[in-house]
Length: 248
Image (cartoon, rainbow, N blue to C red; front, side, top):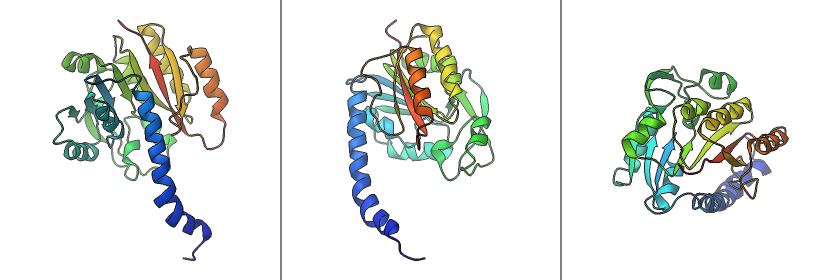
């Protein structure tokens, strides 16, 4: 294979020099965001723990964490990673609107994209999907009954966000959920579910910028208008929406 300038750039500049700097900057921005929600001994739910990136940050900020991860291999890795940390408890389950057993579709080449959503597998044809397996699910209400009301809940479940929110019938002050620009209608569904609990306010960032679009919390109309505006911008793939539900 011929050596190209692009290949040299990736091997000797981008990966060893630029990427670590970029990741450090992203983590600094994330820490700034989560310090708004999390203080020492705060209880957090990490729904869709994956490799533990966000749990690591929650723990750094002094939180106690309940991590819910359905992928068997990722769960085993998490158990090994946190085996000496008593501030995090891990559950090898999915989260949904009821306690049940659902078909889970593992993604072989990108495990963090694994999903309970058949629609998601059809949309993301760039993944190599394995044969589905049966995984038990739990609701946010049940997790609250077991561990207490969290101050913050992160939801990253590859197109099952609405069902996870439907399993919540009490206010969590702050929460976040992921959305994909390929499936923008799911944002409306999630907002409808949240409106059962009060009058939510929103903010969000796109891709891995980790920088809020708005300076202050906004209503759903302003949120949806901004997402629509960004939808057709080149290379934008996903985002994370943050929600303020207030106190009980």
